[in-house]
Image 1: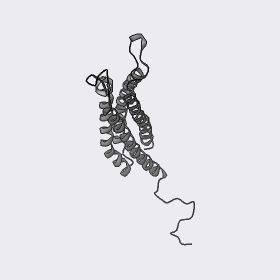
Image 2 (image 1 turned 30 degrees about the vertical axis):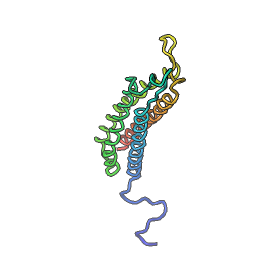
Image 3 (image 1 turned 60 degrees about the vertical axis):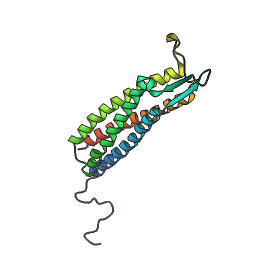
Image 4 (image 1 turned 90 degrees about the vertical axis):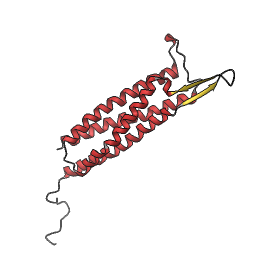
Length: 186
Protein backbone atom coordinates (compact mmCIF):
# COMPACT_ATOMS: atom_id res chain seq x y z
CA UNK A 1 0.00 0.00 0.00
CA UNK A 2 1.25 3.47 -0.80
CA UNK A 3 2.28 5.74 2.04
CA UNK A 4 -0.01 8.57 0.96
CA UNK A 5 -3.23 6.58 0.94
CA UNK A 6 -5.55 6.63 3.90
CA UNK A 7 -6.77 3.41 5.38
CA UNK A 8 -10.33 2.96 6.54
CA UNK A 9 -10.76 4.33 10.03
CA UNK A 10 -7.83 6.77 9.91
CA UNK A 11 -8.47 10.45 10.34
CA UNK A 12 -7.10 13.12 8.08
CA UNK A 13 -4.61 15.38 9.86
CA UNK A 14 -6.00 18.87 10.40
CA UNK A 15 -9.61 17.89 9.71
CA UNK A 16 -11.91 18.58 12.60
CA UNK A 17 -15.28 16.86 12.96
CA UNK A 18 -16.44 19.92 14.91
CA UNK A 19 -16.03 22.10 11.83
CA UNK A 20 -18.40 19.85 9.89
CA UNK A 21 -20.96 20.01 12.67
CA UNK A 22 -20.69 23.81 12.83
CA UNK A 23 -21.11 24.09 9.07
CA UNK A 24 -24.11 21.74 9.24
CA UNK A 25 -25.66 23.91 11.96
CA UNK A 26 -25.07 26.99 9.81
CA UNK A 27 -26.72 25.39 6.77
CA UNK A 28 -29.66 24.31 8.91
CA UNK A 29 -29.90 27.88 10.24
CA UNK A 30 -30.02 29.23 6.67
CA UNK A 31 -32.73 26.78 5.57
CA UNK A 32 -34.87 27.42 8.66
CA UNK A 33 -34.64 31.17 8.08
CA UNK A 34 -35.94 30.75 4.54
CA UNK A 35 -38.82 28.54 5.70
CA UNK A 36 -39.70 30.98 8.50
CA UNK A 37 -39.61 33.91 6.05
CA UNK A 38 -42.02 32.09 3.74
CA UNK A 39 -44.31 31.26 6.69
CA UNK A 40 -44.45 34.85 7.93
CA UNK A 41 -44.92 36.23 4.43
CA UNK A 42 -47.76 33.78 3.81
CA UNK A 43 -49.39 34.65 7.13
CA UNK A 44 -49.16 38.38 6.48
CA UNK A 45 -50.50 38.09 2.93
CA UNK A 46 -53.33 35.76 3.92
CA UNK A 47 -54.46 38.14 6.66
CA UNK A 48 -53.97 41.34 4.65
CA UNK A 49 -56.08 40.11 1.74
CA UNK A 50 -58.94 38.89 3.91
CA UNK A 51 -62.31 40.56 3.46
CA UNK A 52 -65.89 39.46 3.01
CA UNK A 53 -69.05 41.35 2.19
CA UNK A 54 -72.54 40.15 3.04
CA UNK A 55 -75.75 41.70 1.68
CA UNK A 56 -78.36 42.83 4.14
CA UNK A 57 -82.06 43.25 3.31
CA UNK A 58 -81.34 44.99 0.01
CA UNK A 59 -78.40 45.04 -2.32
CA UNK A 60 -77.63 48.65 -1.34
CA UNK A 61 -76.97 47.89 2.31
CA UNK A 62 -74.04 45.55 2.87
CA UNK A 63 -72.03 44.44 5.87
CA UNK A 64 -68.32 44.14 5.35
CA UNK A 65 -65.62 42.40 7.38
CA UNK A 66 -61.98 43.31 6.76
CA UNK A 67 -58.81 42.63 8.68
CA UNK A 68 -58.12 46.35 9.17
CA UNK A 69 -61.38 46.76 11.11
CA UNK A 70 -59.61 45.22 14.10
CA UNK A 71 -56.34 46.74 15.41
CA UNK A 72 -55.08 43.36 16.65
CA UNK A 73 -55.22 41.96 13.14
CA UNK A 74 -53.42 45.04 11.79
CA UNK A 75 -50.73 44.44 14.43
CA UNK A 76 -50.56 40.83 13.26
CA UNK A 77 -49.95 41.88 9.64
CA UNK A 78 -47.37 44.50 10.62
CA UNK A 79 -45.58 42.14 13.02
CA UNK A 80 -45.37 39.36 10.45
CA UNK A 81 -44.17 41.82 7.81
CA UNK A 82 -41.41 43.18 10.05
CA UNK A 83 -40.29 39.68 11.02
CA UNK A 84 -40.32 38.56 7.37
CA UNK A 85 -38.17 41.56 6.43
CA UNK A 86 -35.78 40.77 9.27
CA UNK A 87 -35.54 37.14 8.20
CA UNK A 88 -34.69 38.12 4.64
CA UNK A 89 -32.02 40.55 5.87
CA UNK A 90 -30.63 37.98 8.31
CA UNK A 91 -29.89 35.61 5.43
CA UNK A 92 -26.69 37.59 4.76
CA UNK A 93 -25.08 36.84 8.16
CA UNK A 94 -26.41 33.31 7.88
CA UNK A 95 -24.50 32.85 4.61
CA UNK A 96 -21.47 34.40 6.32
CA UNK A 97 -21.76 31.75 9.06
CA UNK A 98 -21.78 28.98 6.46
CA UNK A 99 -18.57 30.32 4.93
CA UNK A 100 -16.91 31.15 8.23
CA UNK A 101 -18.40 28.85 10.82
CA UNK A 102 -16.15 30.02 13.65
CA UNK A 103 -17.65 33.53 13.84
CA UNK A 104 -18.96 34.09 17.35
CA UNK A 105 -19.73 37.80 17.76
CA UNK A 106 -22.07 37.93 14.78
CA UNK A 107 -23.86 34.82 16.05
CA UNK A 108 -24.37 36.45 19.45
CA UNK A 109 -25.83 39.52 17.75
CA UNK A 110 -28.08 37.31 15.62
CA UNK A 111 -29.30 35.46 18.73
CA UNK A 112 -30.18 38.78 20.36
CA UNK A 113 -32.14 39.99 17.33
CA UNK A 114 -33.77 36.57 16.89
CA UNK A 115 -34.99 36.75 20.48
CA UNK A 116 -36.50 40.20 19.90
CA UNK A 117 -38.21 38.98 16.72
CA UNK A 118 -39.48 35.89 18.55
CA UNK A 119 -41.12 38.21 21.08
CA UNK A 120 -42.67 40.32 18.31
CA UNK A 121 -44.06 37.38 16.32
CA UNK A 122 -45.38 35.74 19.50
CA UNK A 123 -47.14 38.95 20.56
CA UNK A 124 -48.64 39.44 17.10
CA UNK A 125 -49.83 35.84 16.86
CA UNK A 126 -51.28 35.94 20.37
CA UNK A 127 -53.17 39.18 19.74
CA UNK A 128 -54.66 37.78 16.54
CA UNK A 129 -55.50 34.49 18.24
CA UNK A 130 -57.60 36.28 20.83
CA UNK A 131 -59.59 38.02 18.10
CA UNK A 132 -60.04 34.79 16.16
CA UNK A 133 -61.28 33.09 19.31
CA UNK A 134 -63.84 35.84 19.90
CA UNK A 135 -64.88 35.70 16.23
CA UNK A 136 -65.50 31.95 16.50
CA UNK A 137 -67.04 31.74 19.96
CA UNK A 138 -68.11 35.24 20.95
CA UNK A 139 -68.37 36.38 24.56
CA UNK A 140 -71.82 36.26 26.10
CA UNK A 141 -70.73 38.23 29.18
CA UNK A 142 -69.81 41.22 27.01
CA UNK A 143 -72.65 40.64 24.51
CA UNK A 144 -70.18 39.95 21.70
CA UNK A 145 -71.67 37.51 19.29
CA UNK A 146 -69.73 35.05 17.18
CA UNK A 147 -69.45 36.36 13.62
CA UNK A 148 -68.08 33.22 12.01
CA UNK A 149 -71.53 31.84 11.29
CA UNK A 150 -72.17 34.78 8.96
CA UNK A 151 -68.61 35.52 7.74
CA UNK A 152 -67.42 31.97 7.20
CA UNK A 153 -64.79 32.70 4.53
CA UNK A 154 -63.37 35.60 6.56
CA UNK A 155 -62.98 33.41 9.63
CA UNK A 156 -61.37 30.57 7.71
CA UNK A 157 -58.77 32.93 6.22
CA UNK A 158 -57.87 34.61 9.49
CA UNK A 159 -57.67 31.25 11.25
CA UNK A 160 -55.46 29.86 8.50
CA UNK A 161 -53.10 32.80 8.64
CA UNK A 162 -52.38 32.04 12.28
CA UNK A 163 -50.83 28.71 11.27
CA UNK A 164 -47.99 30.36 9.37
CA UNK A 165 -47.28 32.68 12.24
CA UNK A 166 -47.13 29.89 14.82
CA UNK A 167 -44.87 27.88 12.50
CA UNK A 168 -42.54 30.90 12.50
CA UNK A 169 -42.65 30.98 16.33
CA UNK A 170 -41.57 27.34 16.46
CA UNK A 171 -38.84 27.91 13.85
CA UNK A 172 -37.49 30.94 15.74
CA UNK A 173 -37.25 28.83 18.87
CA UNK A 174 -35.29 26.20 16.94
CA UNK A 175 -33.10 28.90 15.36
CA UNK A 176 -32.19 30.33 18.75
CA UNK A 177 -31.35 26.87 20.09
CA UNK A 178 -29.22 26.10 17.00
CA UNK A 179 -27.35 29.39 17.32
CA UNK A 180 -26.65 28.84 21.01
CA UNK A 181 -25.37 25.33 20.28
CA UNK A 182 -23.13 26.70 17.51
CA UNK A 183 -21.79 29.37 19.85
CA UNK A 184 -21.11 26.84 22.59
CA UNK A 185 -19.16 24.62 20.19
CA UNK A 186 -16.63 27.41 19.52
